[in-house]
Length: 184
Image (cartoon, rainbow, N blue to C red; front, side, top):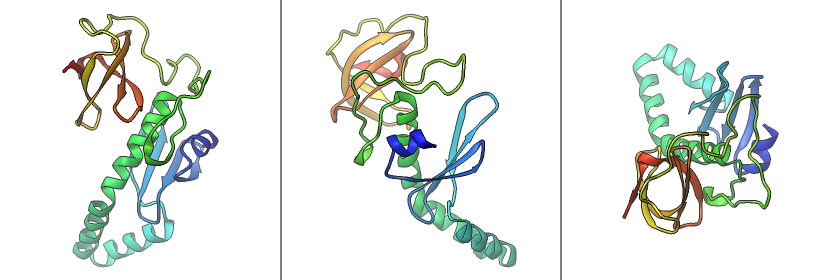
């Protein structure tokens, strides 16, 4: 939690138990971060405010259909903010670099990504082994398909272990499976 507070300071964090962390951006926009036994992180939408959660639950219990409609409206209103939060948090966890306003990451000289679990691959670096990205040359313009399904222009930096490091036009860098990086 302290690492996220330092490196992704635009959100508020609340520890619900030793495996559940809530990141919030207001009363109704939040991400439930669950650290599983397999040492993976799962993120999903959640109303971070307990009072609002209880109100929505009571409304659902006492008026099922209107309550479901209210949940749907709240989800629709907050899902884009939640998706943006998931992208910023996921990128910070993946790259080990602090996030700043707008979700951009800036590399810090000598910064290493945290390795929270012994024996797990270093976050922010490619998986070891496997072929590089054939046919791509450092500095080559590419199109990167990100995990959210969107395609963005960028520049190929390097390949290692079946992963390609790319720099987006806004300066943000990340590692992506080589199959999601195509020459332009």
